[in-house]
Length: 227
Image (cartoon, rainbow, N blue to C red; front, top):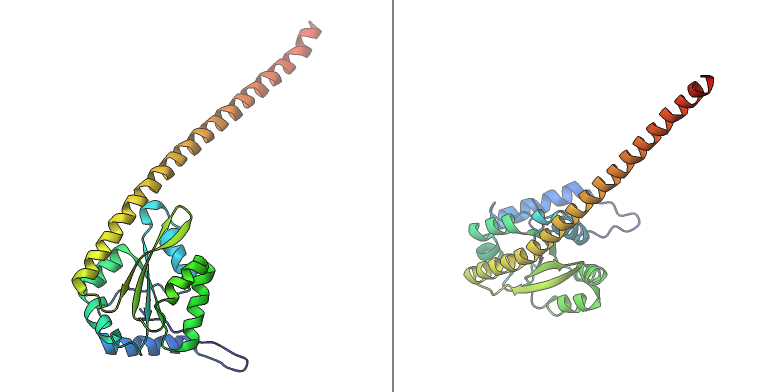
């Protein structure tokens, strides 16, 4: 698993071995922080949202967007002592989808802000922009109520492990309430769909019986005439 993702802008004539790129990142960050860390969604922020929310209600989980910078004063301590603590890493893996992005380079900061705007709108971009780059590292918990993803909570790098765990538990409990409502709505919709399918099948069966009766009547008419 990659510790964080660094997007590489590929311009004309520039070739990047992506597999080698990911391998270097993995080696570098495992060396820094060891093997205990949350699992990260590999892909775009949009695909991370899909993995978190575009699934049946039972499988939906909040999304954590983790924004990191090597230049951040609290970055190393936050990663090594908070995010990589066994209890927090395990809880995140169990209850969240986590997407990470390295914003050490300025051009990558603009990329992630643009992506946030495309998904969360201008207000969402401004929320993230308040913290980038001067207040990194950052954890942003995203939930989805009805059809709109929204920022549920923001945790900065100076948060303690105990407080972060308490806040993560609160986020999960809050989202589970929303998920229960969605699950009940999904179940109700499934029941309506099954009832509609049953009614449609009964109607088709009725039409078929009527056609069979008509066929029998047609076959009997010539016989009656000959007599």
